[in-house]
Image: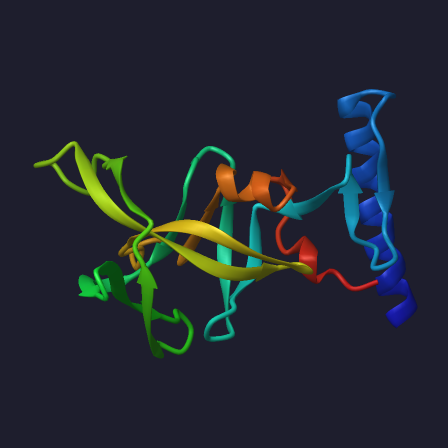
Length: 186
């Protein structure tokens, strides 16, 4: 049974690679690496939802890979700027959605960014200022620091949104018809 499952996974990846080949044209290059991870033009193919690890606390969470959002976001509460050694740090709490365990982070402030509010978020203000911090993450076999803005995403399905800036930095192509491609076993 294990061999059949592995064959189905490889067949699925092969069909996706053929689709990409025809979508991008005959000049495209694609491959299955030794771990049967699909890549195209040297970029890893992942689904619209993938598990990532917040390396500082070794927390595995689901993230939505969103090519329509420029910036990545992480769900955070109790977001408090603090001054230390003439630098501004952001102290915030992350609540792991499955266990409800609370983790406290303290990261240097990179900048504040202005974000257009969704209609349902705030009728009073068109924009909100969000702090941006750098976080080390692991996705697939890649470790990388990415910039994330902090906002309470507890009303959203996924505690993290991985935006286009991070996807480019990580060399990721997103297949919106798939989920959790990084966990397919060979």
